[in-house]
Amino acid sequence: MEDIVVDMVVVDSERHTVVLLCGEIDCYTGPGLQTRLLDLAVTTGRPLILDMGGVSFCDGSALRMLSVTQRECATRGVALAVVGLRPFLANLFRALDMHERIPLCAALDEALWRLLPPADADIHRWLDTAG
Image 1 (cartoon, rainbow, N blue to C red):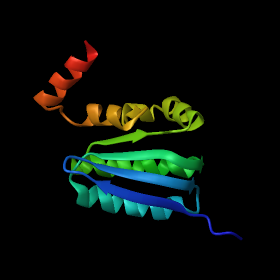
Image 2 (tube, rainbow, N blue to C red; image 1 turned 60 degrees about the vertical axis):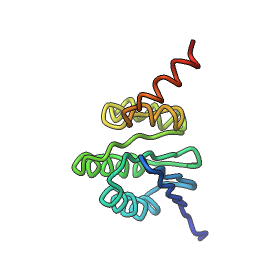
Image 3 (cartoon, rainbow, N blue to C red; image 1 turned 180 degrees about the vertical axis):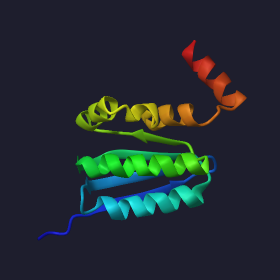
Image 4 (tube, rainbow, N blue to C red; image 1 turned 30 degrees about the horizontal axis):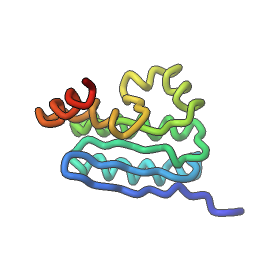
């Protein structure tokens, strides 16, 4: 049997942490990934953005893993958002009302806008480009 893995790359910035996921999340890889995400939720202290754009397959264990991670983040006061979900999983998120607890975002910029209070300079820059 071929090893099934999900790669996780953590990119820390001054105000947030992005977790890039790549591979398959299933009953074999989900528990290990969940442990790593929970450790990160405990230690980061900053908003956490999970980028699932590189995830090629998910089963129900991915939803369970995200739900457990969200609860731990909420307990720790760490904001959480997800970007890059495949349409099927995004629809499943919505059907189970998980999007009410974990914002689903199309891109990193949207996630940052939803999780971080924008600085005045950010708002002015956005207003200048929108007009």
